[in-house]
Image (cartoon, rainbow, N blue to C red; front, side, top):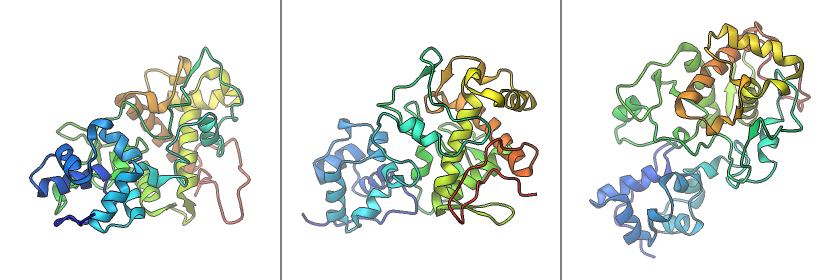
Length: 305
């Protein structure tokens, strides 16, 4: 298979479909036509999101041969590149949800059972941080400032709702909205986790990205799950929602998995989560659970003051 005469290198944290679009533009083709002619592959077989989650192995091999970019680097341009360290897998499986959110409890006990009347989840479609209702969100300022505009792969997941570099919400519309200080602070730490593999807190503690993201997703579950599953944590979590001045407590209604919520509802949840993390780190709220971690690891929700 011959090399493509023009094949720009991937940019830092670039999404696979962003790179393909950039190459297609150099040949004055749309992405679908370029894929068909250069790799005998059609976008119509799957959505762009599907390509960015887990591209077909034959496509990755063809891209590598025709551009000289290593297979591992191309794989890292997809969400599959975050597995198994940050998201476990891109293949939904029974028990994945419980495994992902049960390692680092902070406020409430781990749930062993999910009441069918309160809990709705298709385990064979769920992946951590991957929303089926996801929109093509981005930071317009990042793209405007790029010498070569491109989209980041970490914008494809719901673990951040803003660009902490520019303080604006990640959206598919304009003009961009300003993010709250709490959201910016939380997403700054999450961006460090997904881009560098670690988080450094104010007191100098280093937290592995895998611990950070699983702890964060567990906290989301604790703050949004049905009241009947909270045990002694019920009062603490109800106070968190009251102090956040939110119109309704999410746990008082039928449980909806975070990834299945709409963008506005996920933003609503992440605002409360950001304020809660801020209070946990300051010591204004005390964690209910101390986790037995390996030597050298620390639970990041312990106060730093």
